[in-house]
Amino acid sequence: MTDSKRSKTALLPQQDMPDNKTIEVTVIVDFSSHAQPSIEKRVTLPEKSTAFDALSASVPVVTSRKFGMDHFVEQIVGIRNDFATDRGWYFEVNGYRSNVPAERYLLKDGDLIKWLYLLAP
Image (cartoon, rainbow, N blue to C red; front, side):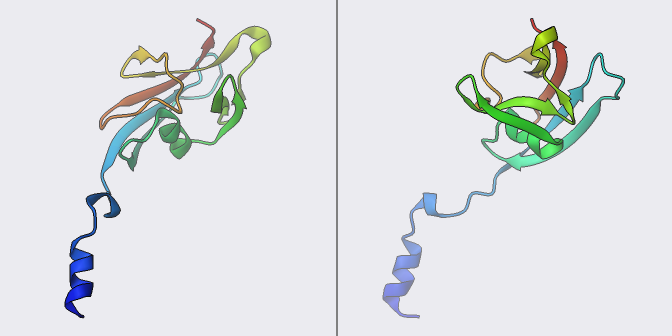
């Protein structure tokens, strides 16, 4: 290897190097009124993952583009939102309901994400 090739390799900017940092979170899906047991999974995700990323890494999810979101959660494990009866999926992180969409809620290592099928608040 020549000196010019060696210096080019050594001068790579920091952002060009792979960043393999990960976080581990717990996802719980609580079906509430449905006769289905809750699901709990620990998942490892890349740092800067969202609540939606954690959900989709844990269970089958159906989404649509709706209400200004690219991934509005329509259905989790076959249980669909039911707007006629005002029931649907909501999520909370560490016991607090979010006012940010799941696709935009950035997670931290150790977060507990709970999805609940409930009457609208």
